[in-house]
Image (cartoon, rainbow, N blue to C red; front, side, top):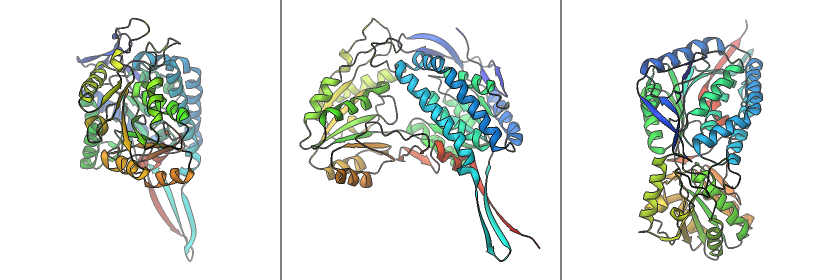
Amino acid sequence: MSLLPNFIAGQFVESKSSERIPVKNPAFDTDIAYVPVSTEEEVAKAVEAGVAAFEKFRKTTPSERVAYLLKIRELMNRDTELLSRILVDNHGRTYAEAVGEVKRSLENVEAAAALAYTLAKGEKMVNISPDIDQELIREPLGCFAVITPFNIPLHAWSSYVPYAIALGATVVLKPSEVTPVVANEVARIVKEAGVPAGVMSVVHGDGRVAEKLARHPDIQGVGFIGSTKTGKFLYELAAKEGKRASINAGAKNHLVVMPDTDFVKAADAAVSSFFGMSGQRCLAGSNLVVVKGGEKVVDLVRDKSMLRLGYGMDKETEMGPMASRAGLERVWKYIELGEEFGRLLVDGRKNKPLKPLNGYFVGPTVFTDVSPSSPLAKEEIFGPVVSVLYAESLDEAIDLINRNTPYGNAASIFTSNPNTARRFVLDVNVGNVGVNIGVPQPMAYFPLGGRKQSFFGTAHSRVDTIRFFTDHKIVTTRWW
């Protein structure tokens, strides 16, 4: 079984660490590679390469940097099938979901190329005073750490790194030890695209490596997508060390169904939101809030939740496994716990794969009559488990979303009334809102929202990273 190398200063380098972590295909519970827990010296070398590359890279023209991004886009398009297959075999999602992640990632590369010519231009005002002009210019700050999660390894990379390249910053990437394989393929593409050595490096390992990277004195900021617990730790560490932070954290997302909606369409959207990628995405719905008169949707969701489980490359598969055994065990724990707090309408433990597989499978699970105060309704499960809650009115539903959980990532409403939708959009305290949309995923040219315990920092991911990777400088000029 191969050991994944680090990618430092433009070269793939085998780690000298003796500590290795097996990388799994979650559909079969088989080892597909090993990932090293990189040493402190290797982390330092990656940062040193980023710092050295920055001195020259920051002076490149926008056209040069855009050319690199367009080449990356071309190569990712060429290798879509390979990248998708890696996502299936290392994460467990279906092939269609994997292709979707590649496409979303390509959109980020394209948006980053546009950013270099638009938002990064700066501003100027002449004659602020007689014969005096003033301008704002944006300058990249140096080398940054980007730490990506197991569930969207490629999309998370694309939410930061292409924007860093567009803006003239450099990055050391630390991918999740659960799904690290695609990071090396991206490194290969970046190298083939001719991106200068050191502009992007990759160091593998677990949370200890992430902490070493974030603490390095030459790292200017930390970009992160993952759990609230880890995100909060990194945010506090960055603040203590005087670094910038863009921390996208956990979620407990609600879908509200009004009695005036199209119940069939709402149920279809809800099931896709709840169980796409086996519930392992930060914008997935988790709580179904049924406003009085909308109860019909519950039976429809129940009937549509009998999805076919299996290996993601099999065409008949509708839902893959959890990405890890730890994730599977967490879901099992909540299902067992949930039987104390609600009525089990669909038991995913009884849903077995179409073919005999030894992977981390659990089917869609639906609880109804769940108390808003229960762990099922309040805590992030990050799996295919849905809680049905009831509200007497829209006001009660909004209050439930705003007050019942510490998170503020996403919420959606299903209604045919534009006034109802407008009230919901304006009053719900989350960063991403959907109207008749199950997954309110912003396109690449918008930042990913997030509030409360779902986000820490001042600059969100994607196009908002212009405020993360760069700082402005004000130049005041007078000629005698």
